[in-house]
Length: 85
Image 1: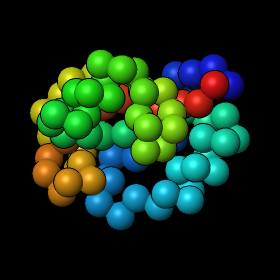
Image 2 (image 1 turned 180 degrees about the vertical axis):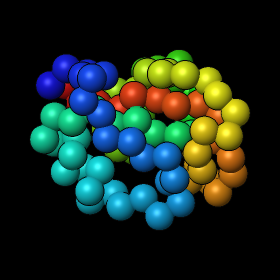
Image 3 (image 1 turned 90 degrees about the horizontal axis):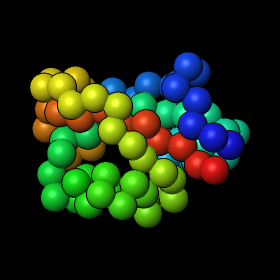
């Protein structure tokens, strides 16, 4: 499915992210919004427009301080769209 920015599921606190739920939603064609801390790993995913861990495309939605909690348990500073084609 294509990215659908008008119908997203937001994950702004990634500390206890349910990987099975994320995989199910992506498999159903949903577009997700994740809050990440823009460290070296996330920068690499953004540069490649792909996150190999969840096998999904990513694109920056907005850079914004304190927009959520990253999986690393630090404040997030970038929101990204996540989807599969």
